[in-house]
Image (cartoon, rainbow, N blue to C red; front, side):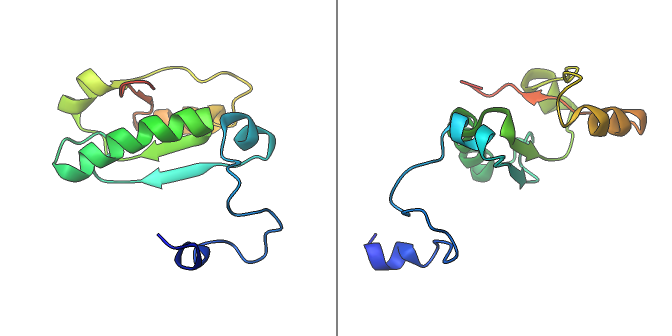
Length: 116
């Protein structure tokens, strides 16, 4: 991809060099960067998109840690092998939200993709 084409996607109001990689877990945490990705195929083995999301989730988690959140529908069959329901730490920004969701019957947990 040429440098001119990729600059199209660079935020014009930023003062950072777009070619310097600052997307590391430490950088994400210290700069309060979050990524929320919503997909029907998140834990739902439908086809090719599921495979893409699965590989992307591993890389994104390496880069952003717990600040990468993948949201999708709950599928009982997939959840048995790919989702672990856990209690979030009290100091987690998700703790209150997760408890409220669980009281409404919504299942929340970590995806058990490789390397996550």
